[in-house]
Image (cartoon, rainbow, N blue to C red; front, side):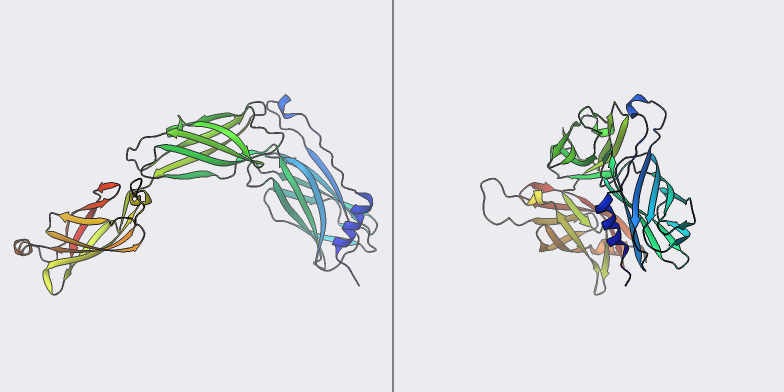
Length: 368
C-alpha cells in the first residue's frame, strides 16, 4: 500500500542529512549602493509518490530580511516511478518559480529555480512559503520552505494608538519591536518628530523580546489628540524602521447622541422629551484618599435657553447613566413657534462627582 511522502523524506534526512546551503555575497557593511548577491541551495527527497499532498521540506535557515534571494531547490526522486511536471502554482507574489526539467525521473532529481523577495518587516521571524508542483494526474508535491528572517529590525505594528486618562500628566509608550541578528539595538539612533520631539526613548529587552520605551511630561490642557513619528536607525548597516504614533486624551464625560432631538409630547404641546447616555471616565469616580465607603452619587442637571429642563438619571452600570430629559416651554414661547419648524440651540450639562464639576455642552433640536 502506498505511503505518504513524509515517511520517505524523514528517513532520507535521517540517513544522509542532505540539506545543503550556500550563501554567497559580500558583507553589507562594505557596500554602499550594490545589493548583495545571495544564493541559497537546498535539497530534499521524495521516496514515494502517493495521492495527496506530498511535502518536500526545505529548511533554508537564516535568510536576510528585505532582500532578493536566489533559490535553487533540488528534489530527489528515490521512488520507482517518474513524476511528470504539469504546472507550478505559486501562492505569494514575493516568489517567482521555474522548473528546469519537465520530469522528476525515477532515481533521479529535478532542480527548481526560485526568486524570493523577503519581507523587511514581520510580526515573527519565522516564515513559511510553498510552491506547488502538479503532475498530469493532479498529484501534488509541496516545495515547503521555512526560514528565519535575519538582520530584521522593525516594529511589530504599523502604527501606535494610545490613550491618556483625563488626569494623566505623563505619557508612557512601550512599543514592541522585532530585532534579529546581526541587527542590534546597541548603537541604534532614535529620532522622534512632531509632537513627540521631547520623548525620552530607549530600546529595552525583556524575556527575549525588544521594546521601544518612551516617556514625556505633558500638561493637563484639553486637546483632541497629538502624535508624531519615531524612527530607529542602525548606522553601520543602514537598517531603518519607523512607526507613526497617535495619542488621544480620553474625555472626562462622553454624551451620546451628540445631537439631542427632543420630541413634542402629543398630550402637552409645551413639553418635549429626549433620552441620553452619559459615560463618566473612571477617574471621575475615584473616592478621596482615605475613604473606603461606596462611591458617592453623581449629580446630573441641565439648563438651556429654550425653557426649563428636568433631568432624571438611572445608573446602567458603573460610570454609565441613562438620562430622561423633559423640556418645558412657557406659553409665550409656544405661541411664538413656527409651524412645522425645528429649533436648534445648546443644552448645558452640569455634572458633579468626587473629581469636581463638569459642564459639557450638547446640541439641542426641538421637533414634532
